[in-house]
Image 1 (cartoon, one colour):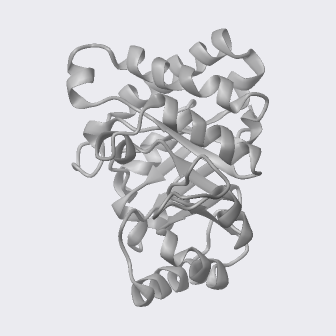
Image 2 (tube, rainbow, N blue to C red):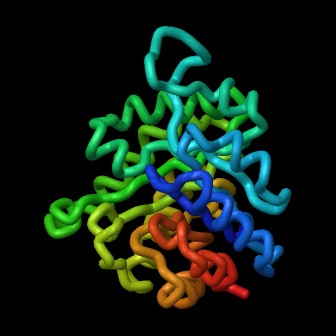
Length: 248
């Protein structure tokens, strides 16, 4: 289908300037697969610093943004601010935003809508909790979360990457088996074909996120409907290079 593999590194609330300099230096020295798009999700306070030292072949994402251009929203950042410092991506709807900060499907959709309208590209996260998986409603949860995004995305699907993240596998060391991951990715793609369009279903990149490491990335990356990874803790380590190069 010609979908370019895309690997995101979500640093979450980690790093200081010394560690960041080491991470970026390691990526500069590495031979990264040119057929893979790499995007780093950076804490807001370090976005401008990373932008100033990162090589051109690596994209930068904010980890969150608000649904308005400006205003009395203490502690928030807007897509306009993100664009103003030369950053092109934002991660929205991450499970930690949903579960810890209580963000609803409707709020996430509003954020996605405004971010795309403002010219940002979006990594939009979806995924079920362990309780939901064990209750057999994985598909139902993932479809509901994705359905909320459809009107927000509109005709901007080419500026969106979906990240399927089983919440039970994030930061736990547990990983969906390649078979489990492939099944939900394929099921989601089929649902998109029915509910959006066949063209969108065939072209949209769907990442897998959930304790991706250098040891499991190659097998996961070989699955036909997995188009990349959204990597958490491992993106802070040298093994991130091996994850980027997993399909080489």
